[in-house]
Length: 373
Image 1 (tube, rainbow, N blue to C red):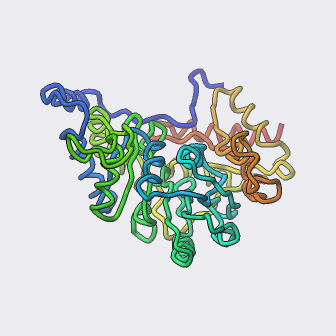
Image 2 (image 1 turned 180 degrees about the horizontal axis):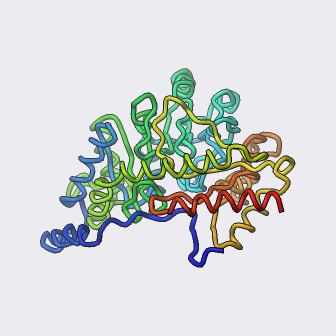
C-alpha cells in the first residue's frame, strides 16, 4: 500500500524561482487584469503553438463554452453527447438551449455522426461534439452534416491541447473550438480556458462578450459577462508553455507502459488508437468487462482506493442521467446504449508527468493481482 496518495492527475509545477520572475513584472506593471501584457503575450504564443489565427483567453473553460454559444447566437436545440463532463451540457442550459443527446461510437467514444441526422429538427441550430480523451471526432462527417442543414459546429476541445489530426491542430475545426486550462489538464493556467475562432470579427465579438459587452469605455454592444483571464493566470500559462512538449512526451511514456502491461489482461480494453493523430494523452481510460475480467469496474475502483491509488470513473454517470436532464426525450433508455455501456465500464488510471514509472508498474501489478484473487 502506498503511504502517499496517488491521484488520478496532478498539475505540473514549474520551478518557483522562474514563476517569481513573472510575478515581479506584474508587481512592476501594477496591472492584474483587462488585457495586460502577459494576457496579450499568451494569446500570441498560443496562436503560434496551436497553429491558429485567433484565440481569446478566458478565466475558465465553462465560461468559454457559455460565451461561444452567445457569440454565434445559438438558440433552440443543439445536438450533443451525453458522454462528457457536465459543463458541456450546462453551457447549453445556461443559454436557454435544449440539449438533444445522441449516442457515441464505440471506437473513440465520440458522438456518432451516423446518428446525428435523425436527431435534427426545425429547432436545431448547432452541433456541440466533444473530442473525448483528446481523440478527434469524425470532423469531416460532422461538417458535411452541418453544411447540409445549415448548422453551426462548436467543438468542446477541452481535452485536446497540443493534439493534432493529420498534422493539423484539432482546435482548428468547426466554427469555434473551446479549450480548458484547468489544473487537471495537459496545459494549465490554474483555472482558465479559451475560444479558438477563424476571423477577426468573431474574435472581437468574443472579446466584447467576455468583458461585460464593452466595445469601448462608454459603449456596451451586448449583454456580456465577466470572463477575462487575469495576468497571474496568463503568466503561469506562459511558463507552462515552455515545458508542455516535454510534459506530453512523459504522458506518452506512461500511457505506453499501461497499454503494454494491461494488453493481455482478459476483460480490459482501451479506446482505439487513431494512426493519424499526434496524441496528447490527457487521460488513460481502461474499460472493464465484468463478465470476462471477473470483477466489475467499481470493485476495481474501490480496491485501488484501499491501496491509496485514486482513479476516476470519467465519465460516470452520463450527463443524460442527472436529474436536470433525465426528463429529456433524448435521455430515454435504449437511445444511448453505447454511452451507457462505456459509463459503466470506464476507469481512468493515474497519469501525470511527475508520476514515477515504478508506480505505474505497481498499479498494473495490483490490477492483475486483484483479478486473480
